[in-house]
Structure formats: structure tokens, C-alpha cells
Image (cartoon, rainbow, N blue to C red; front, top):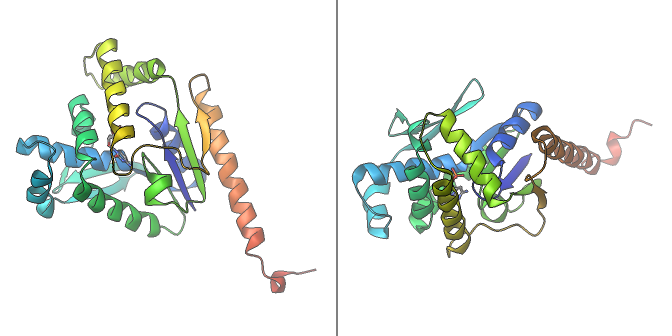
Length: 235
Ligand code: DC
């Protein structure tokens, strides 16, 4: 089973996807973390998000994902950058590098490879999972929430990581990133026609997790009935 969760920054995608993965025994793939790892490589090389920089940097860039005790780790050329990619400037740069065709091609191919390699199923979150990466996903969720609520959540996450930030700054950064992610020409953030919308502004966390879990279970039981051939009949 493939579950796609898309939505803007801070809408609750990652925490929901992680909890659903745990409950249903799926692999969780945070695709934003992969764009962030590429962004970190650009920042470290002192390069802007341009096609030329992508052509120079990407051929030698190794982005790897592994899972330790259910936690996803991202490696950049062998170095574990799971923490380093959470800095706000890396998020802003990730939004810029994600507009580049070569970056998207490299990461989408890897996301599809990982998604198809797991017989138990995968839950992926990002911006284009239900529209581009897995347009045939078994279940598509589009998460939304008020910008101020999303900024407050982001601020809390940053504070928990010991990163100092002001609310207005975080709100502005989120709004700017949304605009960039929605307006870009390639694989922009948008709701797939067959996605279920979950507004997390006033929803309790556990409620949104159970919404996804329930829909996933319904799809699985529907699929097993549809795949039942007449010879499976024991009556
Ligand atoms: O989910 P996130 O905030 O970690 O993502 C960082 C940026 O990466 C986001 O602003 C846009 C980009 N991204 C993307 O273009 N496509 C994805 N599937 C995931 C993230």
C-alpha cells in the first residue's frame, strides 16, 4: 500500500505520517528531508539554486535514507545530516532547489525506488506525492491549516530543538515558502483531484491520525475483496 500525504509547511504531515506508519507497520519517507539534504549541499558549496549549480553538484552527490528504530535518517555523502537539515535557512533553500528540474528528477526517481521496494507499504509526505511521485497511490491525503497555526507549530518545533526564532519571522518564512512551492512551474504544491482534505487547524492530533488509519484500512479491505477470485470461495 502506498499512502501519499501532501500539504504546505507545518500542516502536520510529518507527525501524522510518522504516527500512521507506526500504527500500520509501514515505512515512513519524509521526502522534504531529501530536498533539505540537497539544499544543505548547495549551502555548504556556497552555490545559489541555479541549473548550473545543479549540473555541477548533483552528479557527485549521494543522498541516502535509512531507518534506525523507526526513525528516518538522511545521509549526505555518508554524513548523517538528520539534525543539520532542520535549520530554517535549509528549509528556505530546499524550497529554492526544489524548483530545479535536475534536482526533482534525481529525488523523485529515488522516492519511487524506495516506495516500490517495500512489500508492506510506504507512507510518504511532501508536496507532489499524490500528483507526481505516486499518482496511483492507494490513499491520498491533502493536509491544510491556517498559516498562523502552522507558524506557531513551527516555532514550537524550533524551540524544542534549541533554535531561537520570532513568531513574525517564522510566519513570514512559511508564507513565502508556500507561495514559492505553489507557484513553481514543476510539480507545484496542489491537491490531487482524488485526495481527501484534512484541515488540522482545530483537529486533535490523534483524531487526524485515526482518520488516515481508518481510510487506509478501508482501502486495504476493499482491495482484498476485489482481488478475491471465484476459486477463493470456500462456501
Ligand atoms: O516538508 P519540508 O518543509 O521539509 O520541505 C522542504 C522543501 O522541500 C519545501 O519547501 C518544498 C520542497 N519539497 C518539494 O518540492 N517536494 C516534496 N515532495 C517535498 C518537499
